[in-house]
Amino acid sequence: MEIYNVTRTGETTFITAPTLKEALVSDRVLIIIDDDAKVIYLWKGTTCSVRKKFIGARLSQSVRGERGLLYKVDPVDETEEPEALKAIMDETPAQNPTAGGSMDLAEGGAAEEAAGPVAVTLSAEMKDKLMGEALPADFEREGIVIGTDYYGVIKSTSTVLGKTVESEDIQKTTELPDGKLFDSKYGIRLMVEKGNIAAVEILRRKE
Amino acid sequence: MIMSMLEKIKDEPLPEGYEREGIIIPPVFFAVTEKRVMVLGKEVVKKEIEKAKDLPEGFIFSEQYTPRIYIEGGKVVAVEILKKIG
Image 1 (tube, chains in turn cyan, red):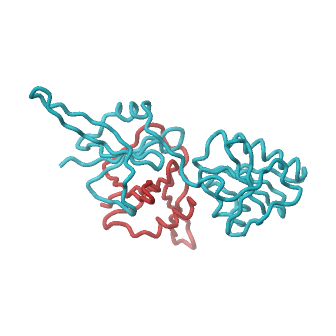
Image 2 (image 1 turned 135 degrees about the vertical axis):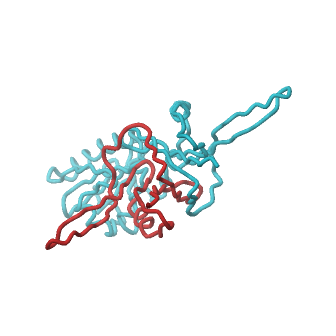
């Protein structure tokens, strides 16, 4: 089994990992070639870019053209892996690409592209959507989770010619403590868009 | 990666008085589903975590729910949706 990582530049890079499942990082699109089953899996992580998906679709067909028409291309979304792919999750992929099987596939290392979530910024559009929805009674917003980023609600109070002016801003918080956070005083509101969780609002019950 | 995170969370003990109703691994919502089957007249219930389909668009809120947030390396890797029992 060989694994190729699809890059944003339209190339693929041969990668290695101790097992297949360890190569499955959510922001990646991978071309997994199972020579035994003659299947080319186009695996798409949940946070991969649309661009990579398009590039992956094109390249997977090229790989099929090179390997032979007996091979079948099977597009797979992360979390919806077929049983046949689940069955080889713990197998060790090839440590080198097949001779002559590189096509335009540039050889590289697993560290070619940093693993991890794609950074998400709180856009003005998102801010408008969230602020435009009235909060449930007895709750105030304390934070918003978008992707893997946490945005804290910063409240500031200042005095202008004796008049108190309050303002609220939302800023990305990077110094979060590792571990689990739970407190029964908090509630949650979800914002769903196109079947996915676009935002999670962390709401605090007013005392 | 997502599956190993789900497995890890499933093994976490729940706060007293709460049950797990869902897990968000951004941006995907996984729901805890109960599957009931009759075996020789006896009902067997199995709980599984599955990617939720057909989530309604827009805002979803209910006072009964409390989040538990999992942070690793300064990032929110998961949000557990816990429901108060009783």
